[in-house]
Image (cartoon, rainbow, N blue to C red; front, top):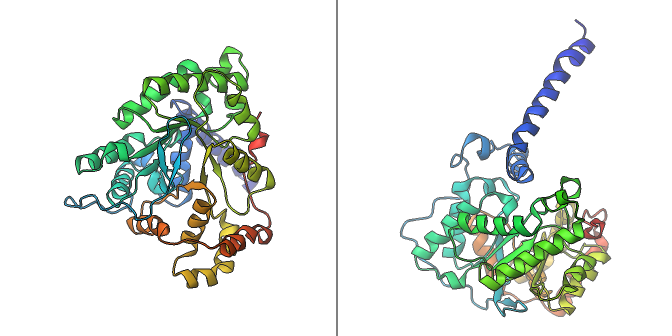
Amino acid sequence: MSIKSILLWRILPSIALALACFVGYLSQHELPVGLFFTIIIPASNGVLPPQIFGHGKMKGTPEVPDDLSPQPRPENEMFLTLPGSGDLMPQNGVGMCCRPTAYDDELVYRSTLWYLLLGGRHIDGAQLYLNSKAVGRGIREAMRRGVKREEIFLTSKIFPTHYGYESTMKVVKSELDDLGLDYIDLFLLHFPSSGPLGSPCSKEGKGISQCRKETWQALSELRNKGNIRNAGVSNFAVKHIQELEAMTDVAPVANNQISFSPFVPEKTMETVEYCHQRNITVTAYMPLGGQHQRSLVMRDLAGLSTKLGKSVSQIMLRWAIQSGCAVIPGTGNPNHMKENLSVYEIELSDAEMKQINELKYNAKGYMNMDTNMFD
């Protein structure tokens, strides 16, 4: 049998069968997109996905000592005030996604507990990450050791495949049950839409704009009941925010979580400026940009790093904070958590802020999500 025949009649059918089985496996889950990421992100980093091979086997975040008690919160800690509630959101948090250790429940539990015991108080999660039970277990253990619930600021998000009034009610209840908590501090619409994937709302023949509005109405009612304290959005452009602002008798848009760095395109800068003008807090993810930009930043800020005695990563986190944003760097490493929390110790001068702002002209080919592409 020729190589061409082997490829045509054996290898390709096997690949097609494997893909069909994988798609079938995903489709059985309530949130197939979330399950996809829990498998692909570890696998693409050469790690066996805990979702398939079991949790607690991955190396990474060390165990938390039984006798470790809560450490003091960072000196000079900074906050953003959320409109409507007046709640204070720490400007420095930890993200619970998008790295292999974020998909192993035992390491998520340890990461959450380490962060809270080291003095951090802002935790960013989501329905999509499929790790809320582990996050909740870490929070409850920290509370048992002395961290007050009212000091913790917890964010979660609803994915667009679950947009709609009734489905939003169910998702928030499910998140609270998984977390084992009475309320969530901030609940966000994760994206403006999910493209062709649809949602319970869209299956009723409603457009994505109407589905967002129904989701916002549900979050507003849940806010009034005390199940969530604030409602916000993520990856929203100005046009999407204005759509919600035009609604009556609903919660104010308290936050927009968005990719933000010196390299973002002008449209993203306009969104951030709009939020600041409207008193909508901004949470920045990826403040160092992508891998290409990261290497440029490391080169261009080496002198400033030496001058301040802080890493380039710490400087960029501080840049985002001084730009009026909260930051949520993702890590399961306790030492990195300490470094990230120490950015309150430094303050960048106007000249140093200008130097970083101008880095955008050095970064070619920056990949950024265009939030305006969503309907």
